[in-house]
Length: 285
Image 1: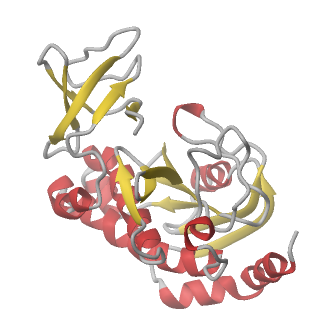
Image 2: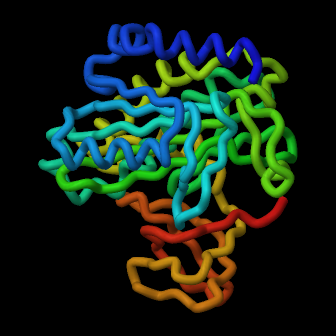
């Protein structure tokens, strides 16, 4: 492993807690930073069950069982990328429990804004419903971050993986994955810089969506969205408010979002579906 990454890791462990806590009052109320774990969400869920404080932050250099939505593996070389989970216990969660499903959307928006601030033009970061973040450079579209939000009692565990320094991806994901370093062409942006910006954006967007529902972030979400009028494939088992799905899934076109953050699509028969979960794939470009 390169000396710059070793130095950055030591720097994170030595003074990351002090630097982060000086900037943010809510998130990073306590910080656990480990070399290796199964997943940071596992650490955060265990702490949440034990009654840890709101804003408890868990970071790892590597994960042996990192995962995303639908049980997919999240792979990351040791020390290169940002792997974190935050325990969220805002009073607004107890006041508006029905708004919990909106937290992944707010989290995706926060991640997209964080990444966008460090990318050179013409690259742009965009959110893909419900909670992936992609980077577009010309006709190229690649994933740079993923989010997994889990409910633990009265808390939410918000797990985030952002590709920061990796430039050598496994062959099977190289065509669809990228990182901040790969887009920039340098390693000028480190994990600590990303996490400091991310936590402020994260708290801002989550509190907004819990207080005001999806309309409170809708304009910013749609401005950062990459699915306007996009052709998509709704995978098998993708539930909708009507409860309709097929074993094989179906092709559709995105027509927007409703006030509850559900994805509106129209299928080939002209039937409009309102999706509140599931797997929606953008058509190949």
